[in-house]
Length: 165
Image (cartoon, rainbow, N blue to C red; front, side):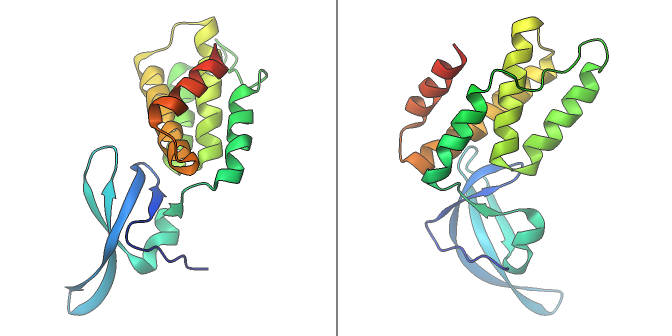
């Protein structure tokens, strides 16, 4: 099931976050012609090239549809998220699990990471790495939801802050 993306369309590229598809270009590499999506990472303005026949394996996907936003906000509102058993699980094991979930690009997993780290923050001081993961997860969620809802990032950020207050 190969997806097609059009110029001007937003998509999510795991690790990089929300990207804008700028178009498709053909390049000759090692004697064969190959089509590439040209992507602009919205967060950093970095340009990426992804082979059009490779999007499934790299996880390039459409932005979550507007009708799914409520599910994501409900995840953030859950009071009984998975708070790690402190003392049982080391901070670096937690960090790796969180980082892997954020890198997956799955908006639902990223929302769970954001929720869980927020709950963890209530019971202990976060490590530098946990703070970075929380900021990264928040940035991913805010960017994607702002595009899905066609709202400014500040509005979405305020909505999330309200959930956590």
